[in-house]
Length: 289
Image (tube, rainbow, N blue to C red; front, top):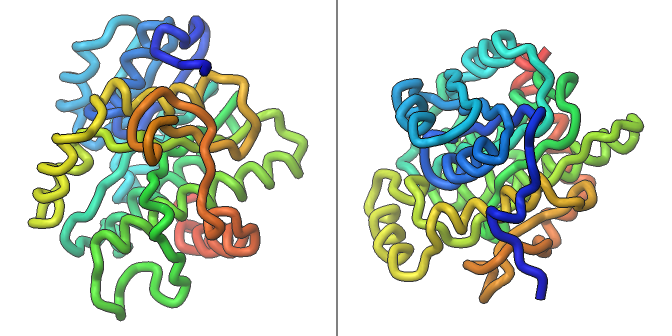
């Protein structure tokens, strides 16, 4: 069986990679590998101070820029301030099962950050992307439902895990629809996705009793950040088809060397993907043009 490790990442010299949420967890681990392989890596982070701390642990050409995906004005400011070509955009940042919280624009935090923030960022940067867009999803997408009647949990009782699953399903539907549009336009850019399996990162150390219980369970079976970053690296550098999805190849995709993996039937629904794109465009229109 073919394996993939950080040592298999080829030289990245001459390439520019933007990684969101790269101050911790799998984003930080992926950024470290790419910078060590010669890429110019931009750590797009909410806290510049934490980003600088992360950058100090890396070798190579690393810079820190502020990006708060929970604030579409910040997304616009980042895109306006970074005008260089981007070879790979890695949509990695995310939040998981916090108490009900709203973004600066009034969206439920997980849908607003994990999906809409990255949707707007990709739309703004796409004219300068030269190779691929990698979006990090989760096996949790299998429990997700896109509730177009209440995407932002304004009417139904809030369920943190349900909201998380919806946002991760949205990541995969976004990847599929983005690839469809890239193909239709004749672009050589591809859209790929990845999931880390079960990785003991800061993502699962969110607030709330449910997150604390999940954190304890994860510590018993989870991969390291470095192992959890491998599917992202695989999706970013391997010769894979557009709309591919990489994840750990071990038991229940929880851990192990990365490979291309499957997704739920809901994540393959082209009609829902197109509708979600249209709705996301409407929600972010003011900021994404």
